[in-house]
Length: 162
Image 1 (cartoon, helix red, strand yellow):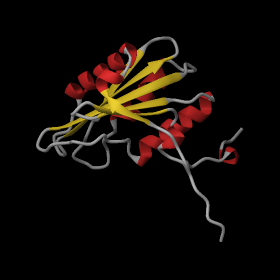
Image 2 (cartoon, one colour; image 1 turned 45 degrees about the horizontal axis):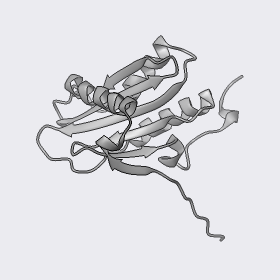
Image 3 (cartoon, helix red, strand yellow; image 1 turned 90 degrees about the horizontal axis):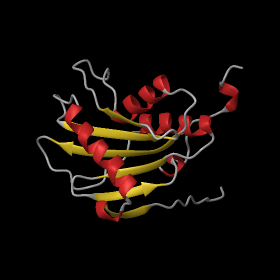
């Protein structure tokens, strides 16, 4: 067996390190936390997407008593953007979290399903989607593309029917 290594880069800092446009996108994601429906987990997620046309789309997680019928904030925002602005590139996404009954001190990254969905949109648009992760204590991590969060994404051009 030959051993391989994967390397990726990301930026780490605090909210005030972001430029004004990125701060606005994060603030939009934070505002979306108020729309989260999370009565079962108490874990609220807000996501905001910047489209190439300058529109900002937001989403929040939506739980359901019949797990796993809910949907994560990232997919709510992406699917809304795709439905209402088809063929418009997603430039970047900001994600923020908070909890009702417990403290979150770390930056939280998207779940595997959301990473896979973001990866497919990134691949389809042939343009990287920058991901800005924001914690309740104002730490941020920035990834230039989703593949840095999901290095072995599930893809195969042969799976698509033409």
